[in-house]
Image 1 (cartoon, rainbow, N blue to C red):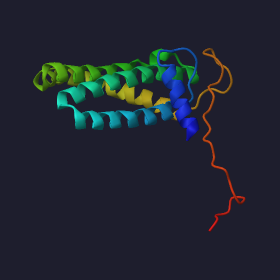
Image 2 (image 1 turned 90 degrees about the horizontal axis):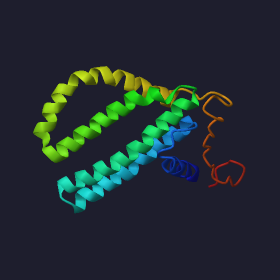
Image 3 (image 1 turned 45 degrees about the vertical axis):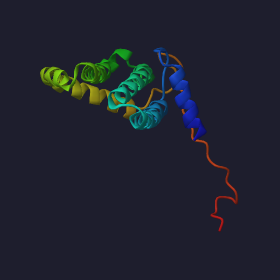
Image 4 (image 1 turned 30 degrees about the vertical axis):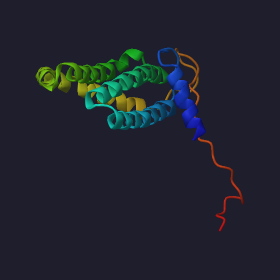
Length: 171
């Protein structure tokens, strides 16, 4: 488990680094591990702060997580030899959601719903490419060896617990 947290830490440190490559494991580990602190933060903030303040705190944290996720998606596309520009549909869809949340927080839900009604037609155009890009990031294996974006991304291997007794269950 330490290896996964170490990998998530390395990804967070490379938040605005769009160069190089990222493995499929790095992408998945960051996506999963970045959600747990957001849930804890939202729960804690909603417990101790008024609803609007808790929503603002959570939205600020989501902006931070999304910045790292965008850079990671660019590096992930580099891992299978594609340009980082392939991640633009993801950026636009995530950015749309974050901007609408910000509008809802500052101007109210009536203004947000009016804007969202106009954007609903754009959603049909953005959702399919964004889902396809996300599935590619998760499912495609990276190219073996070096490519034009750098050396092969290191794979995170889970650390196995010490095996006492040759693998047999001890009772």
